[in-house]
Amino acid sequence: MIPASVGFQCPECVREGNSSVRRVRGGGLKVAGRRWGPVTLTLIVLNVAMFVVTAVSAALAGNSPLNNSDSEVFAQLSQWPAGVYYLGQWWRVFTAAFLHIGPVHLALNMIALLIFGPELEARLGHWRYLTVYLVSAVGAAAASQLFGDPRVTVAGASGAIYGLLGALAVLMIARRQDVRGVLTLLAINIVFSFLPGISLLGHMGGLITGALTAGLLLLTRRNRPLQVVGLVALAVVLLAVTLTVPTIVVLGV
Image: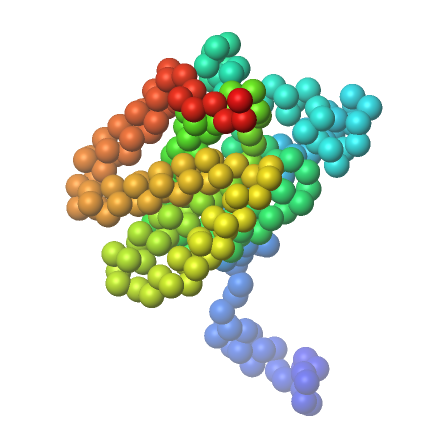
């Protein structure tokens, strides 16, 4: 006999009872992936990892790790419009979207990504969601590259996250859902974007690009080849403009 919570049970009864209980499969990573979305979690890990790399680089240079922007790695990977256009340092357009200036900047963006990312990933699927994120990041970079001060470096995932918000608003409008909450949140964040040290251009570029990408996904949802062609074309146009067109308006001059 086997001791039970009340009295004893025979081994056969225990086996029969256990066979009817659904076993939990997978470890903590699988459970987290199902809850938060594997793409969202991967993006968060990449952003945190890049912060650690820049913090270590700053420490090796004799600076505080919390001031991670005072590092050689950060200087080489942040978006510097003059470097992108005049020196051909094209990688800055991509790498800057995974850099953050200080732990507070990182924490705020990653919390926002964890709040809005999983819902959009569930609606669009992993690859379309990742496409919206990356294309929005390029759109944010394009806005900063074209209209920003070419001497000022820019970094952060904010443009891509604004793109997710824009895409979510478009999807909700298409499904005739109540978008007042999302629009109110966007309005509040746009107001904060006017504060010193925040890239309003990057936020608006990401927001508009995310909305356009979501609209393209909706219009071509019944034609997968056309959808792929449309997304590639949008990304190519944004990249071409970002890398070949000089700054149009120089701010602060």
